[in-house]
Figure (cartoon, rainbow, N blue to C red):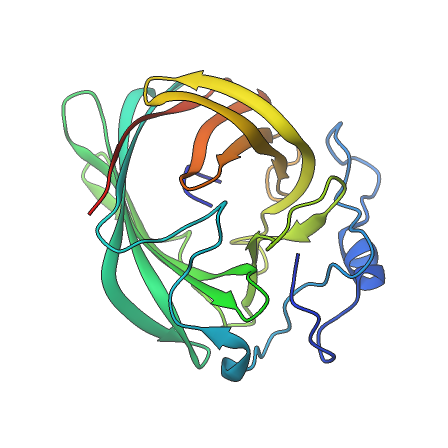
Length: 251
């Protein structure tokens, strides 16, 4: 789970009832509300139809305008890091869908790259943003680790939701899926939050609670601003990381 990370009403896609069934918690889950879903919210299928997607991503809560760069500062157990997220002009076909490529580079206090990631996103005809996977490399002690990489349609991996077209309190959705590798999920908690970060003051934020069964004690809150995307993150259980938007550079 990092600083990046409603469905269309496609007949072939699972209904909100299945969202509830797929994401219902079990004994030993962390102390948070499991994503429950609401009427008409659906989740992706393992084989999304390319005809259900459009070129580019202009969802107001998760806009991906090529040439945009967002700079974040994170503080936590690993010290202070800088995370630069750049929307490239590149595309990549994943599971038959043309996705937007986003490049995410994290550096430590000395400027050394600790993680280098390419993420793949696409928007459906209803305005919902899907996450199709990532090619990620973490560097530690001179070693490169690609363990967190996954791609929809490969090795049982499935695309997931990143942002509904019209977020509603109670919306719950799986953000990504590859068993044992990528299993993040989110629930919308609020549509009216406000946060002050180095990049400015943002109001009417969409607040989500992000969890993963791969780290049962971890709970993160993320805040999305219209026209920007993520502006603030904080780990409220299982850690103490804070991520703040420092700067936005637009083309």
